[in-house]
Length: 579
Image 1 (tube, helix red, strand yellow):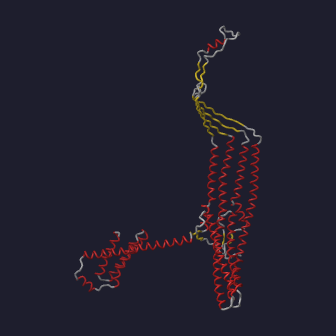
Image 2 (cartoon, rainbow, N blue to C red; image 1 turned 90 degrees about the horizontal axis):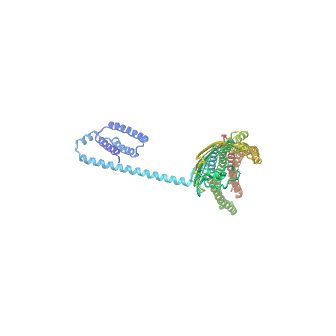
Image 3 (cartoon, rainbow, N blue to C red; image 1 turned 135 degrees about the vertical axis):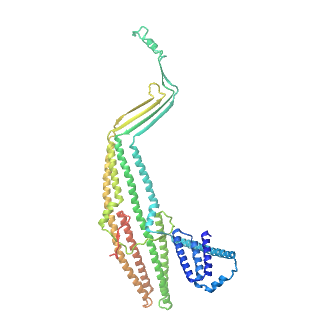
């Protein structure tokens, strides 16, 4: 127990003695108001600063004990005077021990209650978690779309494609800089090479030599003392650094850089295209789960109705109103209803697994599907022409074709530049070791080089090929615009048609429901067979399923229209009924 709680309990005990030994209801009311204010203040502190709940419970418990006896049974004045005159039977130390034991008992009781409350909260939490785990995690349509975009393996591919395109751009940027080439060699020869002509034998001089001693002999004597040293050491080494900057090719490289930059845009547009297709698939899978669950509810409702028919027919059979054959027909209908439920449950599980696959979740993971689709649905806000214009502007497929056309133009410009002569600025530094006196140790030069290669029109043909690609892109763009316009028209008309069919299906459902009610009333009164009742039941089930299917087709067509227009959300406006 904290010191604050212990001090507060002592104060409560002192107040107990005050109320027992002093009279006056007036004094008790004043003190009660004071401590009520204290309680309010402690409550405010508890909410603001998070004081322990134990202290607040101690305050409530002690205050109730302090104010209960004086207000309910206030002592009379003569009793108070008598108690003051009577000697105390117990000493102050004994009274103090009793108060301490009482305080300890109250604190222990409160602590047990607090622990019990915590255990109860834990038990409730575990029970809630068990129920939520059994029902599955809540999943809205937006949450399903986020999971699919984040976890779908096909979407992860575009991250690697984006990295690839970024590296290609950096590679093209690096090609714009001067090229630096470093070469080096080191050799150990069999021996060194010297420039020594002292041992050269030239033979006898010719007769025509004007010198008396002979030409060759004179020249031989001339080189007797000449030694130019080594012209190559036994160990040689060379290091060469060359810097080359293409001038003509630089413009072609700039065009190539534009092509690679367009590649990054193409990857992003492809990702958007896949995201739109994935959104449509997820919405469709989500709707398939909901429609399967709706069919399951319809089948369960039909099963309950058939069971009610079975009870009614059995009663009529007991009173010999209907024959045994009617009972058997109902029994067959009941078995068929159970079989339909089994099939629909399998369809629900399969639809849920398909949605989990698109979201990148385990196939057996359970979800609680919380999305609610308005019934009747909202009306489209916009005309067909408006949606077609938006599709021409928003569809990433059209932008992909435009980007590819831009790439082809940049490639054509690069090929045209490559038809010109190649001009290069060149600079070279060379360091030599062991190459003798005739080779400088350090040497450098800079200048221009011009070259032109005749390739028999191959580059020209490549240029014409790029022009053909541009024309192909233009034709593909026109065809894609027409196809997307037709796709928008199809989904737009599907939405309108589904809206009208939904109104008709609801009228048919009301008629089937009324027919079923009438057939149930006629059963037994007009000696109708159970076949008419079961037929009415079948028509009611079909009408109910048709309403669900039509509503599903409406939202599926709406999802297709969003994909065709290239939008994530569609502007809708409310209306009371669809006409």
